[in-house]
Length: 387
Image 1: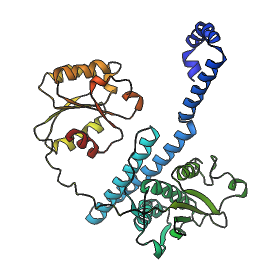
Image 2: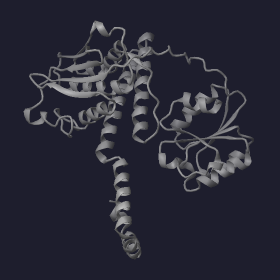
Image 3: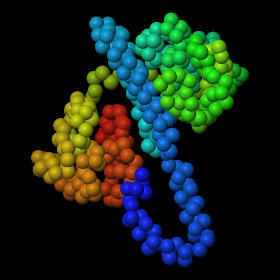
């Protein structure tokens, strides 16, 4: 597609540069080839992106399932509370998956107990299991009752993948078992066993390293991606039994760690932004509505700009203490827009909010901007505004 899009321009450019290329000599050609290869290795492939999208799809399946569950049981407040907590947790996992894929830094997870990981993995897939008439069972090795593991979000991501597959291939009134056992002093083994037809002989050898699927409608990406993710994290994913039903095992290194501190409640946000006027440049109304509600609840006054042409008028309405800027509304005039904000409000704190890493590159150091990459959590925005 890239060649057909550029057409003759690329050919002309190559023609102009041919004499220059010839004069560079073989050493320069080798160096250029090395750089091209390194860049290609760093560039996500279509299969990588397909794998990421598959994992995000799994996470959103859980989120949407629990939102539906909450809607169906609106009179049961504890159940609604649980459903929203699970949906929020899995949405955060989806955010981490996307942020890893776009190259953003993702902080390490706080260690979580093995018991908690089992419960969250099973609970997250419960709506899908209920829809398919499949029972989810869990079993915990008593030796792991007090054990904690790092890498919680990755473990949950892989187990969610395995559980959704297991539920999909198991018959109605069947069962899926999720268990965790201690193997020696250093490894925890999570197992997922279904009651499906098993894995055909011809697909077993490359099931975890090629795009093959054992169920109708499957994309064949999830298991390969899950296995690669396990390897990158220091673990391993194996098919340990193929028939009459399948059993997958995720082996995860156990490292000494302390339990995480209990989370703080955010039910009543502190008025940490009281008196501040915040410019929000955002053309996605859903994102703006989220920012407006969250920041106003913390005492801020919000000034909204949807496109570059509205910026000058918004800046004339009064000072702004901070500016949250998605770069897409600025189009090609990012530098000019940021200069305009800084000129009218010399002490303004500028925070770029973008999901595209390339959007945040090439900005002069003189802009003195900070960045929070999409998808973000409100806590990240508040933290950078109050730092």
